[in-house]
Image (tube, rainbow, N blue to C red; front, side, top):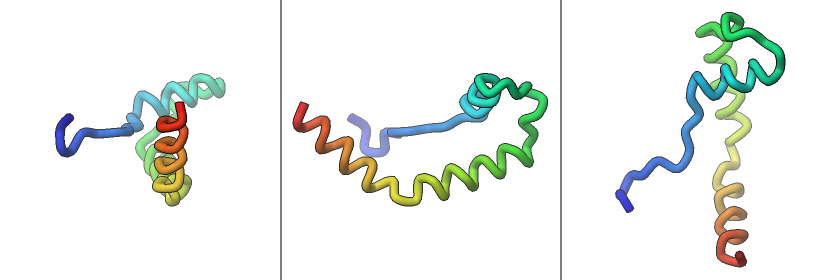
Length: 62
């Protein structure tokens, strides 16, 4: 395993896919919308270490 292997990435295409699932057209996802989504995701993942710790516990129990 690489020393700096990426664990999670959220791309512009992922955001567009979510928007389309919500019935929102791709054209509505502007750079400004992406910037707001990025801020929201960063805020929402503020306690990411707790999520990772729980995932490790679940994986080790499985």
